[in-house]
Image 1 (tube, helix red, strand yellow):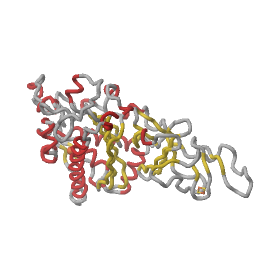
Image 2: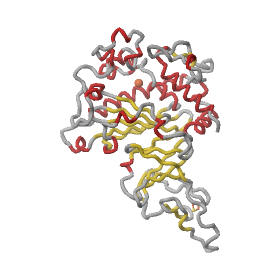
Image 3: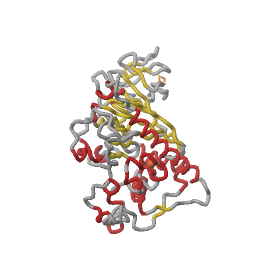
Image 4: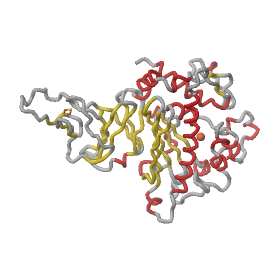
Length: 394
Ligand code: FES
Ligand SMILES: [Fe+2]
């Protein structure tokens, strides 16, 4: 954000940009050198969401990931702690765990190349050699550690080390204490979807940060969430919001259309709703929680949806969605979770299509920058966040 608050173009009695702002330079969305700068300044310094803790159910469970170009292995040690390391052998750099996930055959990570092996806490344990047994001093050549933080069942890593980007809680846009009524740590994945989008990672977030596109791009979502049909996200996006303050009309206050309870194909709840929610939380119908650059979570009365982004290249982004449910929902044969999953998968497909359209269009040589409309104040904030991250000292 701007250092001088009076210079903040988003400040005022309603949410809007109050002066014309240009977008980021188009080449920031495809230039390889810019992409590398963003990996270094953002992706290798911020907390990045990887997966739910439940997907590593027991000691020796492991999963592997690539954050930008960086290989990471997440493993549950003998004590049940999650540990993360660069997935790289200290000998000559081979990948240690080649599979996407699995269970280690022993309490060690053994390199498939020359069989150096490491304890699950990272220390080098064994080096098969005919030469001097102790040519390496004790304590040398442990696996390169990566900081791990588990927040309510969500596993994050930080390639900059635990101190890399400040306190973990700073990484959400919202005060996460306000979601205490959702039993997030006990939820179970009911469906999972991974797809690749032919777009830069920032294109996805910019689309996420505005609803001007909602009436045209998301007809079913805009029917379920009446304020989206107006191309805005919340009550105070309307310059005349005060005239409607206190209105119960969801087209003004936000929330779901009358009679609807959740994001599903017919708006009906799946049942087994979270018991601890307040009336206001029930009535809101959805809450968004964002952790840039990699994660957002949407909370409903009966399920929670977690979406992860990982950059695969300047013009390629992997999206991975986990639909999370209470155990009772998944155990109940009368519940069709597809009513919820299919609905949001459709919305995501609609978003993916416009992201890819944008990516292709950005290559036009005369299009050095675009313009932001007043409603795109959150796109502006995102772009300011990117600029500020790039300007941080290395
Ligand atoms: S590269 Fe791993 S043991 Fe040689
Ligand atoms: Fe959208």
